[in-house]
Image (tube, rainbow, N blue to C red; front, top):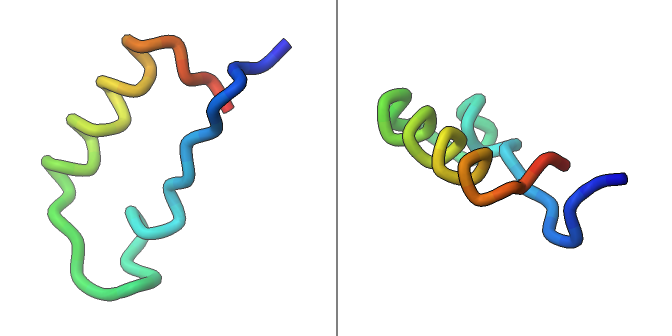
Length: 38
């Protein structure tokens, strides 16, 4: 099964403009801690 909430990460690759890699990685790590796995 997958979590009820999905995590969109398209912006992490710079699709919408410049990104902050460190902030992106912190956000992803926190989502995983909270059980988001899709």
